[in-house]
Length: 293
Image 1: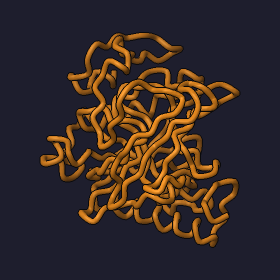
Image 2 (image 1 turned 60 degrees about the horizontal axis):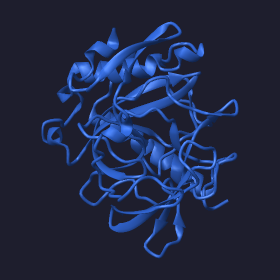
Image 3 (image 1 turned 60 degrees about the vertical axis):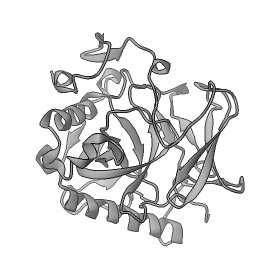
């Protein structure tokens, strides 16, 4: 079973059954873990808080609006002057040192399906809602999950080889380092590879990356440096995670292999160019909030 191949350092786990799929659940609560990231906050989560962080060459803050685990919850981003900014459009894709900026939506070992709200003004982070209910994964995700700002998988463009269209979201990132990173953090990461997931007929790239401050970042330079157990664990988690909802298995292009860093850079650049067209208004934005429409 694929989860047996995951990092043996995952603490306090137990098996439970959800429909046809056996998943793993953490017996220790999320609050029991130490979150280490570029963002630092004191105290417990409240209806409104401000946390200072550094993003690229500018500083920003995040402010919680509404209570956690409610439909009203939002994590808004603000600049140094206190003006609201978009984590999707206003945070740069890359830093001067070449590291990519990952906006962390879902910290490691958590289940709440948080995401940058691409259709809301200023694109705060919110919990996804499905059929009128807040959405959670059926088991925890074992990596930090988020997206790259200033990227977009264009639903109007068909991939020439895979013959599927983009999923209308920023490109997703799976950070495989050893520490959980706070939601709303902007984490500089080193890209390692990418896999082409096909979800309900849509192309949904998953970039594999590692935080630049993780000890393994010095050892991992390309996809072949990443242990096969980690790559297969990520792939199989995303293959199976929707099946408890009676959804089919997700598929993958390119013989289900992760592409190397050179190909990953091309994929990211393509999505960055698509984002530029979105912001310039030369492609249909649909219901997306771009800050220019």
